[in-house]
Length: 315
Image (cartoon, rainbow, N blue to C red; front, side, top):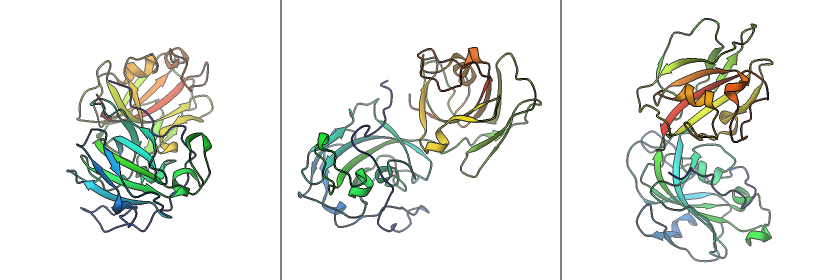
């Protein structure tokens, strides 16, 4: 499987959402972004999961971010905090030029988390959609590129963007497994309502060998070597109790491959065999926390603590 990619990297700076007022509730979910005159004139032909032929009158402009549903999906509405795999075609609404497009392969796509983020036009637009939907979103200049021109990509300061989004798959928003009895001597973990963990480190010497504890026991698929796991995590240094990395703070879940060089051997071993829906606590000495390809963020030479929510398996 292709590694799931980040969407719209390098096109433009992305601003805060100034969406139009939310629409009516759908199965108990009230959308932040609703339909409007601009989004309603966008059409996209072709089967879901294939690159669409997008049509709209140019130039098209909107002061607010709007969303229309072109193909209705199925299942429960996507809630705030849920990671979602999408295919996307992004166009300049003034010129109609394609700015970016995913591969539309069966195993590819981009991972976004519904709700507030640095990519609000789409992440907020995903809320209350369903898997199998195709959405037409028009992002205001502010929401699309902070109203700043980007000559490299032919973007002018007043250009809106069109996003045609195919919703391929959705995952848990947080670990939902059964609480387990905590082990003595391990860091204490509490979570907020949305799943963000808070960690208290014991005032003791850190262990010399890796320690793993399941805090919530999920009942979903079991992770095996090579799996691409969708996760939320926080990493903390044992020495000074500081957070050095957290997906919760960026409001964007991540995809990690079990057993790959982009994941430390200690964390791969800690997650191997664990089930979707689980929350895993891993205490890793420096030798187990080192990432082979050099991409790790853990402080050099430090014992680190990871809290990982396993939200799903991309493949």
